Image (cartoon, rainbow, N blue to C red; front, side):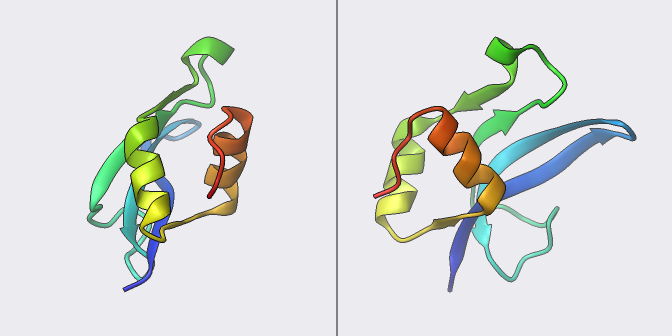
Length: 83
């Protein structure tokens, strides 16, 4: 089973927000997640845009989870280094 850290979309038309989730790579975008590890609100102000559970993200990365390109950019911006 290949595990990925990716975004799961919520919200309404033109007002999206996302949960950063860990899920099987074969699951649909809005399918069942293994764990929710953060939130991403692109419309909010800069300090309210992202909330991350860094310990859980690091644990999943150490177990071999692969972040999607968008999640990778978010993690790099918030100085969570990929090991």
